[in-house]
Length: 353
Image (cartoon, rainbow, N blue to C red):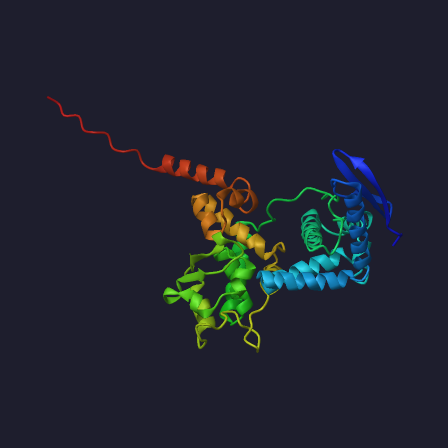
C-alpha cells in the first residue's frame, strides 16, 4: 500500500478541514471550528489507518461472523453471507486498509464476468453491508464500496415448470417419498405448500399438528412468515411417517445420524434431482414456491391470501416476483368463462287472462 498523506488544514465554509490521500484517492475529512482541531482530526484518521494494517480481511470477516451470531442471525444465513463475502474479497490475507475503491471495483467487475446479474448484485449487497459495518465499528476509515454501483438488471421471478411437467415431476417425487426418501418429501413440500427451503428443514415434529393436516411455521425469514399452513392430503401420510417414533422437539427432517436437520441446500438438491429424473427443465426450489403461487392465483385465489400463505408482507411482492406474468389475467378469464357457461335462469311464466 502507498504511504497515506495528510494535507491541510484548509478553510472550508465557517471552519477548517484536512484532506487525506490514500493510494491516490482523496477524501475530505469532517469540517471543524478551528485549524488546530482539523489537524487533530486528521492525525486521528492517520493513526486509525496505521491500525488497519494490523487487521487482515480474513480477521475482519471472523469479527463480522461473531457480530452476526450475536445479532441472532441463523447459522445457515451466516454461512451464506460469509460464502458470498469470501467470493467477493478473494484474498483474505490482505490488510483491511488495502480495500480501496479501485480494488473493490475490480473485485466486483470480476464477479460480473462469471455470475448472473441477480447473483453478483446479491453478493455486492452483502459486501456493502459488511463495509458499512466495518466503517461503523471504526475498523476502516473510508467505505471502499460507497461509489461502486451494481451492474445489470435483476430478473424478477424464476423460470417455472409447465403444468404437465410439474405433474410428471410430482409423480416421481411421490414414488420416492413412498419409498422412504425424506428428500423427496421435502421437495414436494416446496411445491404443494410453497414453503421456503429454510422453513422446510427447520420444522420440528410438534409443528405437524391436527393429525398431520396443519404445519406451523413459528419462526421465519420475516415477521409475516410466522404462520400455519394446511397440509395437502397427498403430503399428510409422508409427513406423518417422518414424525413416527420421534419426540415432539425432534427435527421432522432429521436425516443425519446426529439428529440435526440438513441445510437448505439439501432441499434444493432434491428439487433438481427430481427434475433430472422426470426429464423436465432443471429449476430451483424457490421456483417451485413461485409455481405454487402461480397456480393458486390462476385458480382464482385472492393475491392477498396467497401472499399470507407464502409469508409475504404484501400481495405486490407475490405478484411481481413469484406468480408468473399473466396469472391474474388467467384467473379473470376463467371467472368470465364460468359465468358464460352457466345456464341462463328460467324465464318467469306468463299467465294468460
